Image (cartoon, rainbow, N blue to C red; front, side):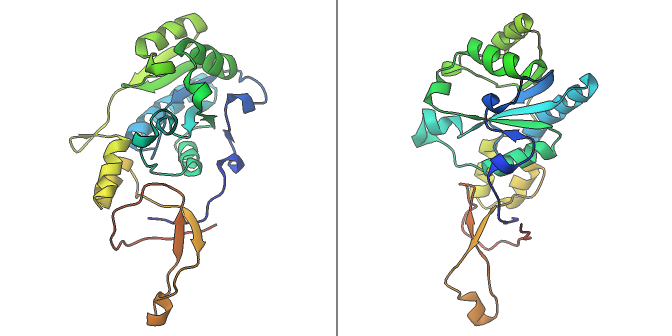
Length: 243
């Protein structure tokens, strides 16, 4: 774990809050789309493919993600706890080769956008993609009506190609945010790290505690965590950095 004080994702260079925040349509791009919670090794395969295509085309690589998580709006009772904060998600996406990150506000109005309208108004119009990179189980648009076939059809009409990245297997387990959450909730930090491709971390602000540690010679830093998912109760060795 690496707790440190974070800031709003709006202050992160290269990150915009929705396509409407772009100053002007891009001249071209390669776009990859997803919730990207945790930015695990499965996500990283998409990011690598998008970055490679973008470099070959000489255009920016763009990650298109959502906040809040779609399930928070569509099925709040079943919505997963987030592995990382939206700010850290954006930072991780940039660290894995993205030139820009679009954090699209997800609300009830956006949930009603059809698959056709999403491809036309949120991808082709503002981002001008030459390629769109998605995962093998990608779905989009109202009621998740859009899939690989509809995206390819939209790309044929609107001028972009579609690249589909298959599942990433880590030790016999298909890498997913769900599997990362399971490992962390079990206290299996090592297993989570294998799926993430890095050590799990928490971010947050240091806040006052009961100050018991200093009475026995071990003062501690109490962190109010930004992510929603915490590992199961236990004692963990950590490295700490701060801003």
